[in-house]
Amino acid sequence: MRITVRANSGEFGFACGEHERLLYAGLAQGLRLPYECATGTCGTCRGRILEGSTLVEWSGAPGFARLKREKGDVLMCQTRPTSDVVVRVPANVTTECDDASRPAWQTGRIANLRRLNRDMVDFELELTRPLSFAAGQFVVLEVPEVSGARAYSMVNFDEESASIKLLIKRKPDGRFSDWVFDQRVDGREAGIFGPLGRATFHPEEGRNLLLIAGGSGIAGMMSILERARRAHYFRDHCGYLFFGVRRLEEAVYLERFCEHVAAACGKLEVTLALSEETVPGQAHPQWPLLRLADGMVTDAAARAMAGRYDNLVSFVAGPTPMVDKALRLLIRDARQPALWVRYDKFT
Image (cartoon, rainbow, N blue to C red; front, side, top):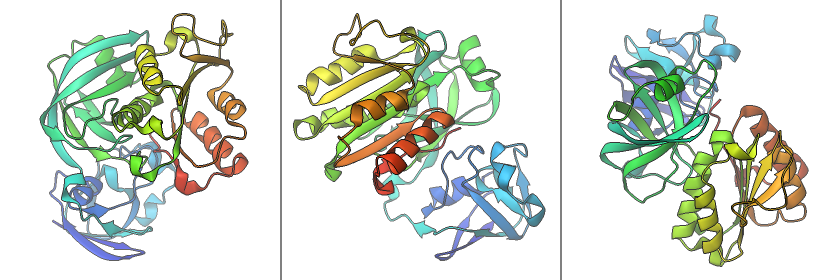
């Protein structure tokens, strides 16, 4: 079926099969359509159907909350065509020239699942073909056993990776996380679509790094640190990572943090902020290269970064309230240009 997109920047067309969602088909064919989570949560990929008919897969998606469905508004990530369609997208749409960076569907096999703490695991997805992605990007993951798609950032980084590592946090009534935690999932197949996301790190930009993460938002920050280390980025630039957890026992990847700090020769600071526990000292009792701070991660970052915001590119990931507070800190209080503050809405 033929999909015509009428956008602020002109008219574009692409083909879409009856089992494909509008957003994914357009992205795979080189259109830069608006999106953030790509799973129905944020509402960024909204469009209005002007002609034709469609089928919405998840009518209860949170992203529909601000849409006018009676006027034909849809989430393109949840919508499949049942005829040729004309859709109005209230954004600038462009075409992607680099075929290698276009997202696509492929299959992965779950392997090497590890329990990191009470409610976090990570595992590898062994891919059917190598994936090229930028540090900070994510994929949409689907499994036959659970309906719907979920977005997860890559923990690892390689220029072209035969496998990707994903971090999963158990959530109340989370059907996918319950499946991962309660079933034997090693060896199971999953479909992935990606790479996705624009909150990406590029060493050639040459700015100091500020990373603020809460909970499983640390995943993409690990990929950014790995990319920076491989590029010897901290020879000429500084880095500051603030990782918020409720209690010290919930922090993950501590050994890897220490390896990054040691390799940076004093140019990288990693601080764990504990929101529900008094810190036992200024440094971690087992990992002395890691700093500790009391309170919310955004408050810890504000205290430590006062007067150090020059020449920064900042990355934010985690629960929505934390992300919103971090954005207020960086853009309103610290006066950081929006160009240099990067995040993707997952929740």
